[in-house]
Image (cartoon, rainbow, N blue to C red; front, side):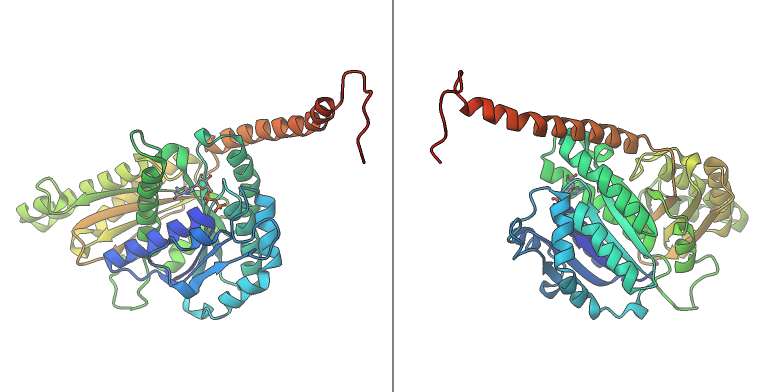
Length: 390
Ligand code: GDP
């Protein structure tokens, strides 16, 4: 697939930057157009791979932002984006839209810029283009507290109703001990970039020269066509390792045996991907549609293996809508399986975020109500004998 990618806010921009890094390292060419949008000047300087002229600062004249961010307030983020929509549209104008299959907007939903400006940008893109617009959204961890949960729960409603599909990444599930927050984010961004690029870069070559099992962009788009919230699983096998797939492949000499051995291994790889940590933990059987992509040397990916993995997932996900194919990467020394579970409806984390958000909203309303009273009581003497000067 060929994409136009837009990162909104700090997390969104960092994720896009990691996607560019991963495609660079692996010789892929997924992101044909890139743009990052932020309200904080300092955050805009962070990406390493996004060209300078594709970084857009919004809200620098807005009284509450002034180039320093929106202080985690999603409503200000949305307001700033609406005010500067002409600037956003202008940068998007030179995108050759016929060169891309879809547009991907990435954002962290717990902050102010991604959660608020993200949906405004998506609205505009949906108005401007017929191509599907997908969201890639990070859900905040419980440990971040009530405010990010409230932003995320509200922003999720905006994102999911406006995009053609929303691929979620749950920071809570991916948090690991013994790391600073920044180290943790760095690792999570790499993991996410590996999954999303491996998934969406399949079918990027238009050549009719690709093999018969090759996955096509339209297959990916069809799977994402359900709308709703989606999750990705991933597993890879190092082909150079003695217990990797290659050694078995080399030691067997009869074609039939090679294929059946490969089929078992390939199915095992997909099983591992599905049972691995998903980008959003969910009940696999609640998926509406699913898709498997094998990325690696085509000699490693037998048709029999693809078919047996597809059949296995069809049962596991309890849906007849499972597509499977390969993305030939002849120079790769790994074989990766990436599984897209589209429109998953049983995912406890979203309910947890909503509960945390409702608590936070109630607490904020309570605080607002007593604040005025407390200030008045603080500055008023016991018997109310004093008057203000003016
Ligand atoms: P914004 O710029 O105002 O949109 O705010 P940020 O993007 O800095 O943060 C929004 C949310 O994204 C936070 O609440 C975190 O949950 C998450 N976040 C921030 N940075 C990263 C990152 O690098 N990786 C991941 N996975 N999550 C991040």
